Amino acid sequence: MIGRNSFTLIELVVAITISVVVASFAFVNYKHGRSKTNEKIAAQQLVVIREAMRGYRFREGHYPDSSVDLTDVDNINDVLNVSISEDVASFSCSGVVGGGSFSCTASALNSDPWELTASSSSLDGMPYCSASSESDCLFCKSSINGGCPL
Image (cartoon, rainbow, N blue to C red; front, side, top):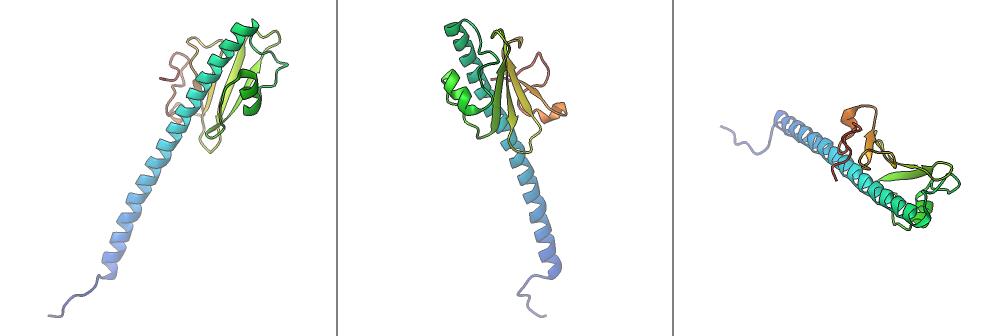
């Protein structure tokens, strides 16, 4: 009987195939977890913006109106005196003439399909998710009665 000092080609192929399958599951779970975390961070930042808008209304007597440029993070930070970053989402806010209401959105920077919205007219003031399908909203509920569980 001849001694066996190495693996056969079939054994190597099977081992590599199993490794690739396990790695693909790990990558999908990592990507899903990262997307959910990014959505949660964006929702929390929208809550900060919403509260800053309420503070602005308390100080000024109205929300920022359409003449105030809140279309990028730098302007949002300057006008509302907050510190929001664009690490996970791009932010934009708009008011109406007269400053009676506002709407702010956070859109995913990567290929994630979600977009969060917080407005002065939300029933409970929490950010809500909109996406091409309800399953794309990983953390926030897409129904108007749900909001983000912060």
